[in-house]
Length: 78
Image (cartoon, rainbow, N blue to C red; front, side, top):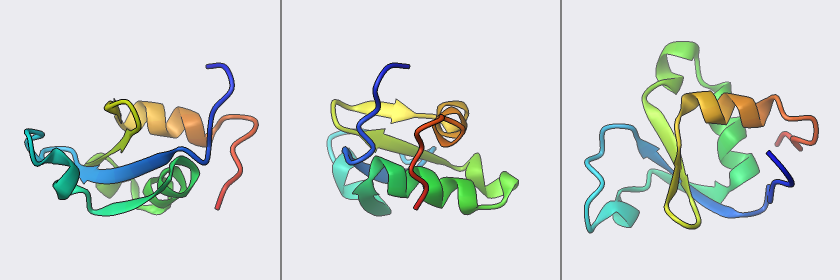
């Protein structure tokens, strides 16, 4: 995975929000990558699957990638 910028800006989205030109306006929550990974992992398992994290560069992190980040050795936890 390489070095992770935990302070990178990111936003939380519903997995089925439709993307599109207004995608950035559909963000439910904004914060750092570390904050949003912590937020998603604090949800119950059923709810986690309903969200994705979008970070700089239009990279959309699905649940498997979010869980892998939370398990990363240098994850700061929030």
